[in-house]
Structures are given as C-alpha cells and as structure tokens.
Length: 202
Image (cartoon, rainbow, N blue to C red):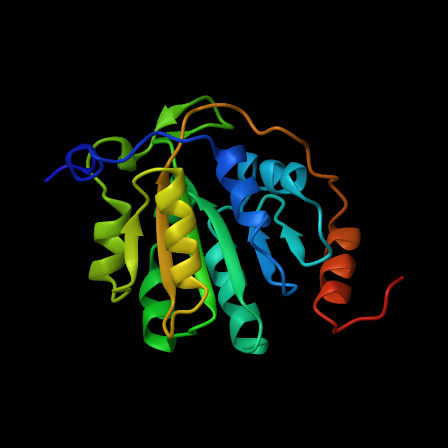
C-alpha cells in the first residue's frame, strides 16, 4: 500500500499552526529539538524558549539528538520535530530508539512529501514511503498519523503520559516557515544547556 493510500484520511495541516498548538501544551520546561530549516523556523516563531534547540545544517539528526537528551534527563519530556526528508535519511534512529525505549521521548514528523528548502523535490514519502508504517516496523508501536488538528492535540496529550516513546506524523502543506532562526550555534547551544539546567548563563 502506498503512502498516499495510508494517509488518505488525514487532513493536510499547516506546520506553524501545528507547532503553535504543541507549544501551548508545554508547561513543565519540556525540551524541544527542532530539525533543520522550516521546522525550526516555525518553532522559533511559535514560542522562543530556552528549552528549544534549533538545529543548523545537521540534516536528519533531530531524533538522535533528542534521544541523547531524553536519556540524559529521563525526568524531562523531550519532543523532536523533524521533516519527512530528514527522517528518511536517518531511519536507523527509529530502531535505536525502539531498542532503548526512552518513555519521555515524543517524535513529531512534519510530512509534506518534499525537500522544501532545496527546491521542492519530492521525497519518497510523497509516493512510496509511509512514515508511520516504517516507525511501527522499526519497533515503535505507539506511532500514528494525526487525522486533523484536534486529533494531533489528542495524540500529544496521550504521548505526554505514555510509558514508551511515541511518534506522531502530520501531513502538512508546503507553506514556508514563518520566522527565521538566529544562526549563532554557540548561543543556541549555551541557551539550551542553561534551559536544561546543565550550564550557567553566559
């Protein structure tokens, strides 16, 4: 079954709107790792927080970075926001996460079926690769497509009290990111480490 068939009952949503809905739910200094490009542009615009980490140039590493944070701080909920193209180039992370089972890790995949930043070339998710099917087959049983915005919020609420890692896939449109991340890697790192309580502010 093609990815298009698997997601035919899911609404195409807007990444900034979905990201904003997530941010409003964060009440306990949850960490959020934003994947490269529009994913972290919208994270920045939706609500800048010291617990947000904005990736620069490290395509496909949002889930591995979030896994490290989740293992290092098991009492803190950790969210990872990733695009379909980035995830597809780093699929091994899914089986690693399934093996280590960090119950505090929640992965959100923004799937528009294109490599948006580089010219809107189609990704395999546009035709043959089903993100949720891949995640489930990798051992992440708590994986699901969000049917619409309300279902996304319900899935987030469920994931925040789950005892296993969760993955939520969202079909999104091709609108560009709303904001632009300040591109200072040292500042991003230091602010994030301070936000997690492991470094004094500069």
